[in-house]
Image (cartoon, rainbow, N blue to C red; front, side, top):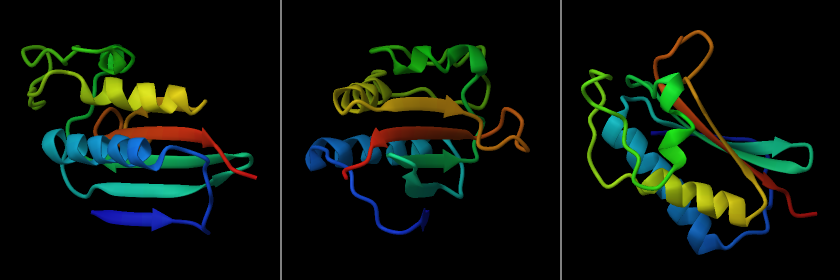
Length: 129
C-alpha cells in the first residue's frame, strides 16, 4: 500500500466512524482489487479529499451507484474477475458515514488511462476552518 498525502488538513468528523469507513475502502481494495493500493489525502478548496485506488478488474459503470446500496453485490457471472464475498454492507456503511458528515462519495475507474480497469473511491468532506 502506498500513501500519498499533501500538507496536513483537518476535517471535523467522528474519528472512529471515518477511520472505519477508510478501513472498509482499503479492505475492499485488498479483497477485490490488485496492487498497488494507493491512499491519497489532500485539500481541494473548502474540502478534504480522501481516495483509495486499486488496480484490479474495477466496478462496472452500470453497478457503481448500486454498490453503495445495502446488500447489493456485483453479479459475478456478468463480471468475470471480480470476487464477490461479504454481505454488500461495506460501501453502504461508507456512504452513510460520508452523508452524515455532509460529504460526497464518487466511484470510478483507477484513472482515465486505465479505461474501466481498477477502482478509485473518492470521499469529499467539508474541511474544518
